Length: 161
Image 1 (cartoon, one colour):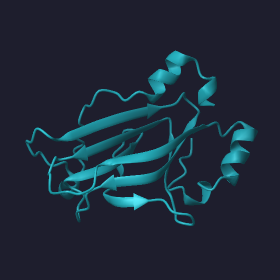
Image 2 (cartoon, rainbow, N blue to C red):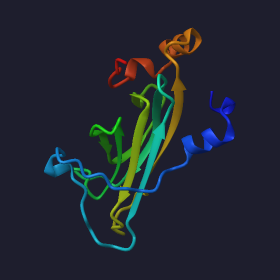
Image 3 (tube, rainbow, N blue to C red):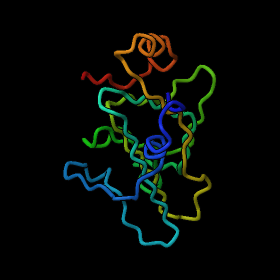
């Protein structure tokens, strides 16, 4: 599907947007971003959008961020439809044959944030590897392929549209 998009639309779809740290008022204190002032901080954010009526299926294969109990110093975070945090991961999670992948299914928009406070004592780099698919559930061919995919049984929540 992505190969068939016009270049301008494909570029807009895949390029990260300038970071604008979100500050939703309903985020529990333990999940709020730390505000360390180091010059080595990493804060990257990608907003991935589809056309109306299409869905995003993201399958994360490798996630890497230093582990902490509250994922405060380094994390990979996913938010759907700008309505709050859906998931925050830290630690080293490499997909292996037979293991459950980290799958996000969303209607029209997903925001991915990568944060690392720059603490040099951490041994893991912060980052991720993911496949992104755009699915038209009203297209019988896309729908059947989606239902038969390995990701379908692992979807966190199917959004009704």
